[in-house]
Image (cartoon, rainbow, N blue to C red; front, side, top):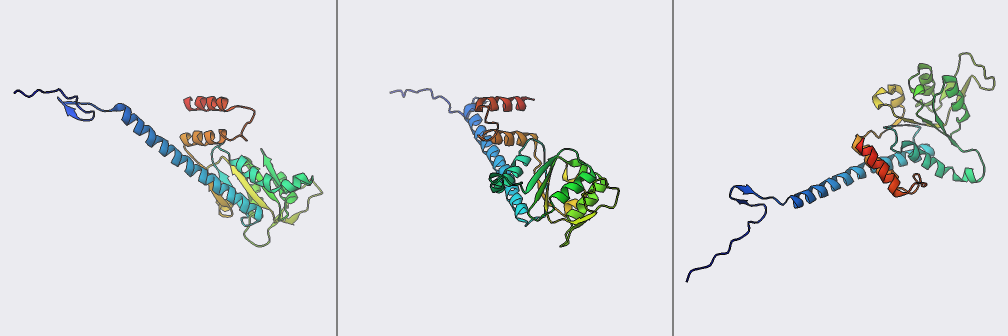
Length: 242
């Protein structure tokens, strides 16, 4: 009796008649899973760096750290992170209608303006934040003032021996406050003496990492609450396509 034969369909992923059939859907799904895991790991690493920034800001507020430089690209949450810590810590001052023990200074600043601001926040409980005030990190006179403010000696005396129109300012004073610099500058372009006197937090990242970080921030209800999630997602898609 002749044995009947049934044609068998070649399994995917095997070689038949010199033709390799691959399960492209399965491969694409696996690649997507690997990519998603990789993106999640990268984002987790980025968020850990911002967790460190939070803890170091608290350390500055306590006085464990005298000065800190936070560098990185704009729009990733450097300023928001630092200010959130200081605002939470100064909540009782706000409720009691007392002057906050910290101030965020933005924009251009002259050397005499820097001297005056340091004098105003010279108390040991004060924290002065310079946000994108890169002029003072490149001006020679301002740098000399900052070197005195961030000196490692127990007593930090800042002096002004040039012409002074503001008679309410002393010619010298003891600075006991803390300073945080938030800058878009590359750390290597910041004066070595200032870097050596400060705790450095580097938040530099690739363009893809910036978008991942922006997406994480956008998911927070605290970020631009007047816009819904779809509008935020559309904005991020537009950024990705640029």
